[in-house]
Image (cartoon, rainbow, N blue to C red; front, side, top):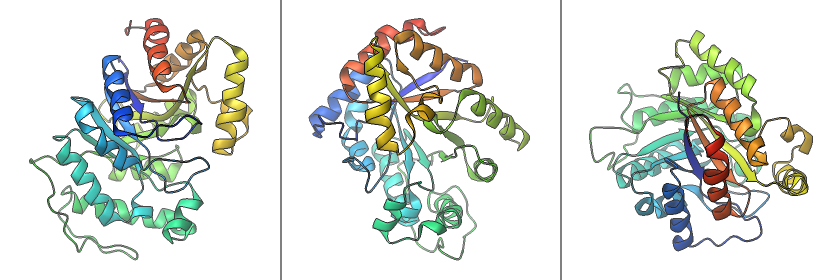
Length: 310
């Protein structure tokens, strides 16, 4: 299967951020010109680096995105509240003429939950209920839902400009409970590149098969695939040691073991190919700075080395 590629909006300040509609729109147009088919936005209230609001930035680039599919990777219905999240997802779906993939997840940052005044320890129970509420509010399920934390007693209007509703993809790092949730409630699965490996991804697809979601028919994507193409080993080490590890609060060697496309074009191509061979249908790349140069480097240096994409 040919892998489709997407890009994350450059929402994080790596020291040279310029968050204007003009710059973000130019970035998206460049991505489209390089053949990327998706544009994605992640969601945090607070972070270790300055972070532009994801859904707002995604709305700002809709015109620039043209025919690209837009995706939330992921929106946080527990942090924002399910009604608020349903409202913003419905708006993005309408304003993009039905081109939204609505990715949602529980959130992994305790700081986000503290900022929202929601106990971090309740995130899983709340997320299970929030997804069920979203399914009702977005018109996917008709039976009302009443839970401990949330209920579907409100109405989100306008819901959609057409008869379609956005596909609801659920994020999971691959836990048994997470994959069960994806299979039961999701229209697709969003994996995380820095929380997985190609082998782990393949094994998780097998578990989805067992849960009644055959990989060939069930959409998947690998999000937050950190990217930095460089022929200089010291530059790649700097990205792992001084940028990515402190930002994610992870050991640099652990991140190296994940097989992220950080390094030479040949190394990046090998790591992307490993995910493709494992069954990845879509890979969403996030340049770690130098965004315009990295988009061009991936298109001109890495893609020609990938089978079927030159």
